[in-house]
Amino acid sequence: SYALYFIPNTFLTDGLKKEFQRRRTLRLAQRLICIVDDEGRLEAVLPAIRDAVSTRMGPKLMSIVAQQYIAAARQHLSGSLFLRQLDIFATSKWSRLVQMADVTAVGIPAALKAARSTLKEDDQVDILVTLCEGDVQRTVLRASRLILYDTSVTSEKRRKRAENLSILGKMVEGVCRMARSSE
Image (cartoon, rainbow, N blue to C red; front, side, top):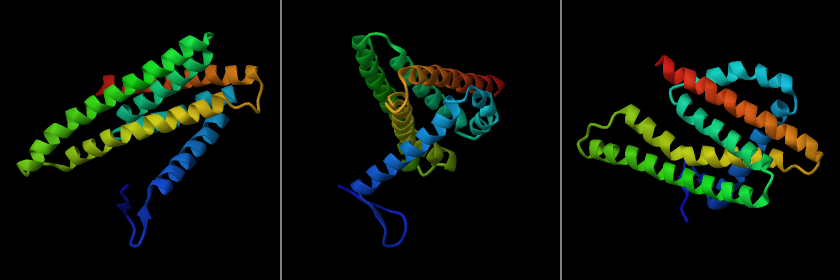
């Protein structure tokens, strides 16, 4: 077990990190419910999506968000329990492989630059973003599943949420694609 030192006399233990993860997931789920329960809100969030994508690492992180929205919706809308579980397994393993490849692709050149003392701020930001990708994936997927498997609403409402979440994911994906093509 390890602890991270951020503020004097404050340590982030494993329990605290889990609690922060739960809080992030719940906050995102609360915001998602407001968006996917009201179809009019889907278009209303487009400026916020564009703003998020316009940041330095926005296209990279928001494309991950879009993938997770689409994957959660696809898995929820699957008619077969076996195919749903297979999709969940395959998506999980594939995202882990992609994350490991990204960390390796960014980490090795950064380590070489650090050894040569030529590591720049952009390289450090790339490393931090790459390390945060897994947390973004997990948080978004958990929040998406939380709203899709909410038993306090009818199954029809959950199905509609999944459809709207898929639409939202495709909107984010489209904005990311436009941002990459304009670069």
